[in-house]
Length: 416
Image (cartoon, rainbow, N blue to C red; front, top):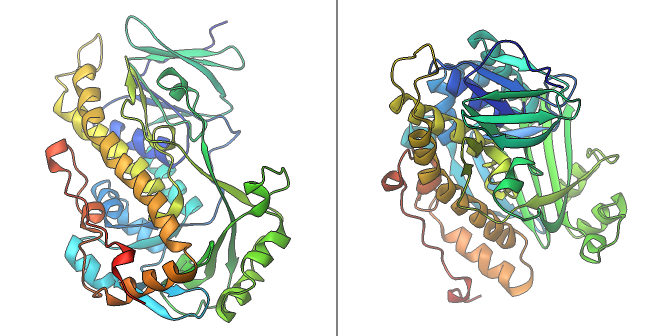
């Protein structure tokens, strides 16, 4: 049966996470009527902290949301990388200088707080928000695209944006692939503290493991992430990532890391997945956004940011390809807008996904390679931005605006 909502909309977005809501906000700001379908009974997010670099806070400011985000998050002073074995500092980013360089701050925030900011923005903008809607199929139609739900409902619009995550149903229309497991497992914790000591993001990199700490919610909460290679996952066993593996993986790390392990949530843990990059995100009037298109490993801290960038870029191209609204539709030349979106975003996100994989390998080195990595990092000048200009600068709208990549330093060029 067809129990679709009676009111027609220009755009349907499937997925009410950070990517779906930020995409809805971007398109609504261009005067479009947008409906978001979320499969859960309520809009919400689980998890702990997020790091938002200037390429994201720039967009939040464009949406008028940066002040609220800063009030709910923390503006850290530095990102400090240390060796997880001996706690020696390897390198750092001065985030006040970084803000001066890129024009926008580096912000850490609880995932649910950012989601709430975007949800309230969508509510104010008049986005139609629908829950309890599990999408099972997408199809193109003569006039646009259509979605089908598990309870028999269906809906259609001029365009459908699939922001349905790592295991996207819509992605199956474009490529026959599966998530790629790295055999790494993450434990998390976001615990209340009267006062969290320090105002830095600290990353301890160690043999086959790493540990991240930073404050949240004005320093009233301490966020931690512990990531390690699971021997059971490597062996293909089902009971991967258990607490005994966690403790074993960090047994040889320094005191600050081992003390932090006592705060981890030990009743849940997450396998680390990404997908191989794809260059085609659009089929007809169906387009991928966020993790449906480019789920990364977490080492670049760009997963949520890329999704927010996707929505902003699409919104800007919609604005450029829109004539006056008529009685028959939105006035958007969707073929042109989606083509422009697909011309720039897949290549940028490919760079991030592949760099995250390499960065993860770099973090987890052992033996002589660990010593060479440490030597390279210690030689880096605090104010050298050659490795991050390509990622923290303004989000490209066209391929010619995409900056050159950094040049890696071969570790075997370092004598230790």
